[in-house]
Structure formats: structure tokens, C-alpha cells
Picture 1 (tube, rainbow, N blue to C red):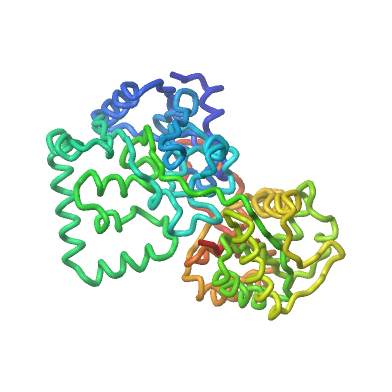
Picture 2: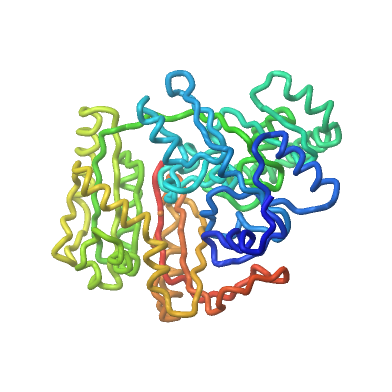
Length: 455
């Protein structure tokens, strides 16, 4: 237990612009500790927030009551079925998990930009998916099973054949309520169709209501609801993932276009050619990226109207890579590309160092844009999703808004979704550490944009 003010202040901030001072920080060692904490909080009406890496950009790892640190005693990965599955504890970083799985030619589906620091528990709890996971490779789709602790202290292992029987015995009202909600949703055809449509694209807004459609039993429903629940339903103590093949043959290109509209027109063509990722970045994002070591210095002079696509193909072997490269060359023949700087090549490459440089610039854009914000402002980052074929329209509107307010607009586009990430400098300074602080902020029009499209 940590209660000294010096300890509490260390936990008052995460990667978001907010600061909240917890009353106490607890460092549990095992499931018994977690169960006791939740049972106590449930009985006393106390609030509990779980924290691992603290890489959240929107304050999910902060709280003003009981903060539970699960980094110290909750790491580890066990490779199963020769790499086809992996049992991973919540404090394990995504990078560590993928490094272990790489020996078996496998990797996790979720691909967050902060993989070097963020943990698997946070990825599942926030349904963080990153730039290539889309709607088919995210946590919801690739989790085989979960072990979690409910607020009452009840432990549920969804892989246990007797899990539903035990849950009904321990939590009868919860089970009855879940099945009643399932029946209510399924009886409403319009609501059912709306839920399916919302989750056909990326959607991390609220609880995953499609869990009521996909799960047949209370345990199956809870397994789905836990993904993206941000710790509000309980603590995820262990995950078992179905892993994916690690396609080692990679071909990438950074292609420059005269405008965002021109770049947008090329996105579906590369998706159809089989690209696993198509990242759209506007000129302001590219210019801000020059602060990242290794990014060409001449990007600093790129025209405001410039946009670029970071396109990547991955294949398991030489034949597959050559087929993708031929498809990419066919798309390239119809593109209107520009060379706004001497460092621009507009060519696909297999060179690992060059490709790593492209992704380093892409993954560092939030840091780069944040570093260039006006003094006294705070960076606010948000995502919104639209069907991939429809994203150019909101892109144009947001671009127009940014020009009208003289702010400086990055964009990821994830098949079949366009995930638009906006970064805005807020005119409100970071709030003081106070129990009365609210999370509302006034912000200007988005200053930077990225769009991700992939599988």
C-alpha cells in the first residue's frame, strides 16, 4: 500500500493531459489480493481504477480513490500449441509478447503504436487495436479466453467448461440480467441491425453491445463485454490469445500526393491490392515529424496541402511478396504523385531500415505534434471512425475547419474502417491536482490528423 503524498503524486498523471490524485495506491501480488480489494470496494462503495503502463491518452488509468498498480507482479507469457496461442498476464507489454511469439513465427493481432510500453491488460480493457488490426485482428476477435475478477470478488475463467454453472451459482442475478438484456436486444430487429452496423467498423465508444448477439451464455457475453470495458466490469487477470502468422516478407512505400483528396482516392485501390496498412498523413503531420530523429530534414518545408500514404504489404514467402509488389505497381501506374522534397522517392522498398524509419515517423506523430503546440496549451487526442469509402468527406470538412481557424491539421484508414485521429491544442491549461477537477476541456479545431486503413 502506498499512501505518502510523494507516492500519490507519481500516480496522478498518465499520458493524457489530466491529473487526478488517488487517495491510496495498492500493489496486489495475486488473485486473492485483487478479489479482496474488489470485494472491499464493492461493499464500501469505493471506486477502483486499475493501472499498468499508464500510456492512456484519455485518462483511463487515473482515479481519485483507490488506484491499483498491476505492473509489478502481473507479467509473463506462456506460449501454447507451438505458438498458435499464448497465455499472457495483464502487465506484460505487447512488445515483450510479440518478441516471444516471433520465435514461433507468430504475433498478436492488436498493434497499438505504444506497443513498446503499453500492456496486454490495457490493450484488452481499452480494445486498443492500432494501425493494422482493423475489425478482424483486434482483441475482441482474437481472444480465445479470459480470466477476470468481478466487482463482488467472483473469479471467472471463460475457458473452464463449468464456468457458466459456477457463475449462475455465484451470481444468479447477474446471469439473469445478462440473458434478459440479450433477449431484449435480439427481439428488436432495428436495434440488432444498428449494433451490427456499428461494429462493422471500428468502435470503442461505450460497451460492446454486440457481445449480447455473439454470446450465447452469460460467461460468453461477459467475455465480450470485458473487452473495451476499461475496468468497469472487473479486473482482467489473464488472457489467452489466438495468435496470427508473422509474415516476415515486407514491402512498403511512402507516397506523396498534391492534396488530401488525391491521397484519399488511392486508398481503396491499395486496400483492394491487399495492403495490410495504408496510413494517410497530411503535410502538417509530416512537417512536425522532423523533430523525430531520422526523419528527413527537408520535410520541414513541405507544402501545407501535401499528403502522404504509408503503404505496407506483408507476405509469408517470396512468391507472395512478388505478387503483392506486382499489384502495387499496377496501382502506382494510375497515381498522381509529386516530389515536394529531395528526399522523396515515391518507390516501394524491401529495405528493413527504410521501412522502420517510415513507421518510426508515423508512430511518433503524437509526440511530434505535441512538441510543436503553442506554449501554455495541452494536446487533446481523439479518434472517430467512418466506413472506409466515406472518409474523404469528413476529411475535407475537418481540413476546412482547421484552415478556417488557422490551426494546423495526421490520418490512420483501417479496412473496412477509416480511423481519423485528431490532435488539438486546448486553450485551457492542465488542471491542478484536485479532487474537484473535471475532465472537460475546451479545444480548438483539430490541429493535426492521421487516417489508418488496413485489414
